[in-house]
Length: 277
Image 1 (cartoon, one colour):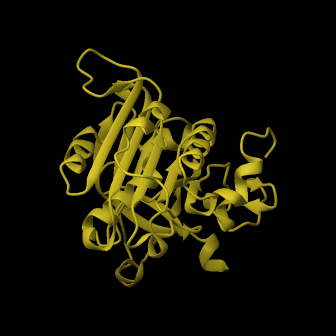
Image 2: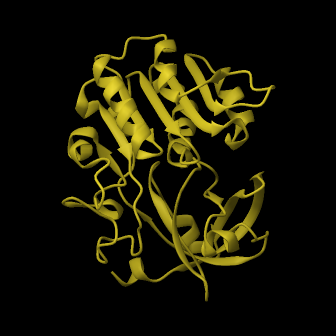
Image 3: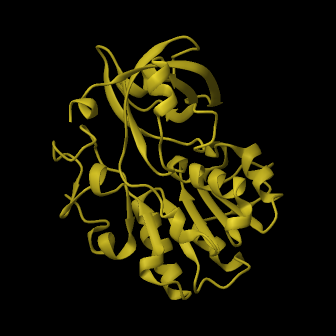
């Protein structure tokens, strides 16, 4: 329990500006023994802490084989995140984790996958995509759907273009509002479902993003033949402790930090969109 409460020191190895207010921090633990022993699963998160400023939960976006370094993509939206994006190589911060339950990748092997992400909340799914593409022979067809409000909000544009060139991979992108150079769909992400090339029955879906989007996408997947237990969602709540002790992230009978953040559709479908949950 003490280990879960105490941050370990990490050093910023690299800081990559994704957009004007969004940066990816590549970290390593400064204690060599702890660094070598560090493990995480796609879909888990760390609590990142800055002394005298605060602590926030941030998804791990790197693949588990990324030379023991781990990446966090941070958007400057509050006091702590604004300070995090100002960090530079050599700066130090505290790390607790990894916490939570990740994506069901063992169950996904041998099956077609549909990854649906919306807005700037796509980070939890990036580790899935990287995991699958590095182990391509273990999985079926990969379909990636990403929607943003404005085309300028799209993170990792170059990566999406590279992923679209991978074998057995379909990438569908949408923007509600787009600049003239936007080459993909203009409109809602749910309109992309008509372009999916394979039948959805028997596939497994992984979704993250705004809850209204996930509700609409989940219902469309069900209408198109996907089974409820095969739809997984990464939920976001106000997580403070990371281990289910403070109660801030309660979602009905669940604590998102401990029982999630990844849940199967039947476990949370009745709770989605309800104020107070």
